[in-house]
Length: 85
Image (cartoon, rainbow, N blue to C red):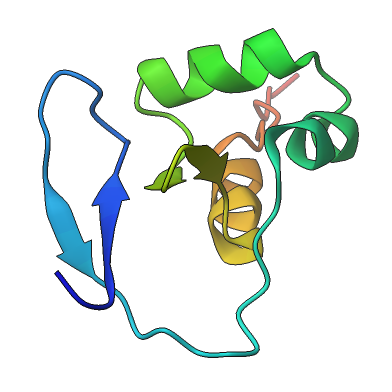
């Protein structure tokens, strides 16, 4: 399966998705994502298991695209409630 990556967003189901394999594609390791988010690596793996953070299994490694981490952050934003007095 050339240029296919295992989508590990759902560990119970194996599915392959076709991604453009840009030679300049930057991939992040779980430790890098954990440091960026200020959480432990275990928390990063939990976020993957819960389907909140998209990750990719490349060979035996779990990798992340920076734009997927950014999307997770955007989806995690807390909007304050506006109260009227």
